[in-house]
Length: 427
Image 1 (tube, rainbow, N blue to C red):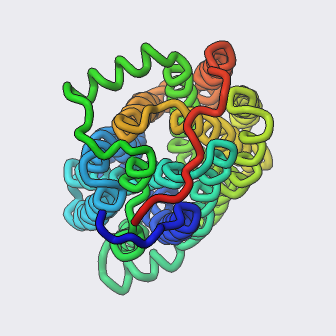
Image 2: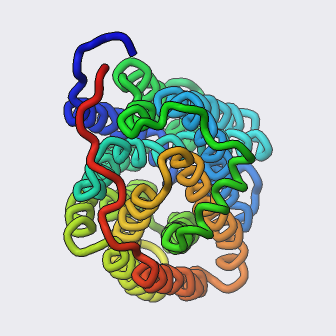
């Protein structure tokens, strides 16, 4: 680069985190505002409670597929282009979900839900973008503060179901499609923030800092990722932890609105429970990040698995409708997910080589979401055949996978801090 001016990478990191926090805050509304109503809309369109979990399942499945697409785009062109693409696809999916409700089309709803998952993929990738320029000893905190930012939109989202219903009446569309119409605005704003503010690109700058400006390694991305995971088993353990925690959370969360509705709970109360759950997922992330940097990634991952087990036991004994057990169980379900996700994601950021970092991170999110989509798809069948308590108890096996992943990570955790601290680079 010809400009002799010296660029302070620490200053760029602060700007990057601020930009990502802003985008997460508004983009999260687009993801979570439909959580409390997606399963109900799918049930109404399909006429079957066994298909109620399909909308959320397709959203998770879409997040899995798009995670790989965004990883390839980011690997070639940087974080900014990939994140904007993710939010644009999510916006399109939200609009399709509204049209599906108007037309009464289940296939259109599932297509919209899959595209809506692109916003989840973008938000997931944003947490990694926060670590590109962060020093190793503060990497978990940088990741966690972006996760925390989701709290603003995520907690507000489910509680906007009332105003969203009013918007739906004003637009003369089905009431349950109102949240998707309102959420699309958040996704659009998030994309604009990233497009305007995420400069210079953190991943491209990190490569320049490390002197990795040459061509990327040859071969297929999947083959490169497999080779890296074989070489560094701690990455495999981290991916296992991510998948187990996400699958346990999704499987139980998507069926909770139906379990509550069966007991006569109002949509407003269901929205509050989902907000409490989302609060557990995101609000304590900075504390989790500090703890992860302070005591170690495997230790916090294991703690997350234990919290998930407790949450699932509470959910299993929760009666239909509104109860303290369902409030407590869903809160701890989110908190356990937070511990596991922050710790495991930081391990992925720690140990993925810079030249294939986006590919490894995209693959981790692909596996995480595929396993969760499978769990979400089976959740409706389990609840329809055996009930919500059976679903919660069965999900304990997934939580125990998180504990096993923590043990494996501790055994294979390399010594040393990993990458060098980013410093200053000619701009």
